[in-house]
Image (cartoon, helix red, strand yellow):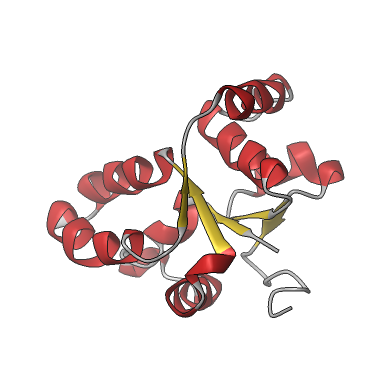
Length: 143
């Protein structure tokens, strides 16, 4: 299983008030098994945007904390026509443009989108492409 990591997970690695044990477990696994993870192109831009807005040293934290994660062997998935078309279909079902790309990437890779966004998850729950990690990681997390 390929795990598609949402920016909402990564932000919790760096903002103390937002920290969460499930997010920390995902970071640990991303660093030890990066081949099991994927992120869309927009991921780093989203994380940077949030950090510079919410963290007093946002740029420094991004450079020192996020760049090393991005330089692991995590699959950075580029924008393609197929991904854009699939994202459009998810946007038509009520996902934001950003969220639609995470869902589309999970579908493209036969993976699972890990997010804290319960509202987005509920919109596509029947597709079994997302998992809200606020309470637990997916059952097959270690498999």
